Length: 440
Ligand code: GDP
Ligand code: MG
Image (cartoon, rainbow, N blue to C red):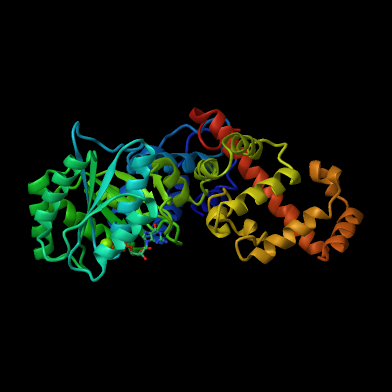
């Protein structure tokens, strides 16, 4: 990740005091490359790098940081600021609130309509889904399937009625049925076209949505920026939802969209399931772009699937230096409950790094089983005190017992140490956020 590359760049520099011009220039080269790699729009990269350079110039290096860490901190903070700083909230009307989802075909509108409805119902709202896509074959059916899955009513007038009239009738229906939020699932096209834009404008004029949320597929990278610019110019959107962040995208699109439209990103879609929706956190996205992983999202996710107390304990143990192989086993067991492994592991700090790949957990469940075998072959004492394992004969015994090799055991120990280090860093950041990411 970018964070490691920056650290690497500054490894040799031990000096304290001000950041020199050369320090900054070297770092900015890395920043530029990494952002482009993460699919951030080149114009956005340019202005971002200029801004960060200016900020870094003459900055005092904090006592506990190296110059490299200081630059990482500046980049991280600026990234988060660029994406809006704080979380953006949804706005509601006192009577019936209309949310209108717009975006290209396949962006994830229909899926997001369902996710949003479920999200709102969990917060004591009474949503109604309205099928305003009358063009895509089976679009109405798709929304009905979604609605049924989460037990939320779907309003439709079939595919022969004008979407503007459908939207109006949906409002009327909501009033009669006592629903307080209407979510309009509108049509998309493969490309922006005028007929579609006119239709969306007419829907907007007819029902005055409180939020017009542009749904953007984060995998589309550079293209996402043009799409966002277009929709925003014509509809004056109120916010953005980025979908498919569970893919291998680094999230650069999110950064660009925010910068280009000036509109906040409110939610992200992180999978195909109805529960795969997250409030968008600029700080965390900054971490993701930097390649620091996203331990906070992981903990949040864990909390909804695992008993909350259990998760909190796990979370805080992960952040301390006592974290041992017993905790590691627990964590693995609980993660298994949470779904696709690679997706979860991505969120653990350091999992993107080369060394962590040594653990190879994300590759297959088989690897995970191997890891488990190795840990099973440790004595309880060893699990609780991993330092004991710094001993060749113990390693040989464990390898033999688990049907693996000493190399495998070493690989696991190395990965575990790296993970601990990262967790500790995250831990101190949490305890003392003002100090920055690398406060000692
Ligand atoms: P629409 O044309 O904008 O309504 O898009 P759909 O809601 O029909 O979604 C298009 C495809 O993307 C479907 O196969 C969805 O299951 C998938 N999809 C939507 N959101 C996500 C997401 O957050 N992650 C992943 N992996 N797939 C998604
Ligand atoms: Mg659709």
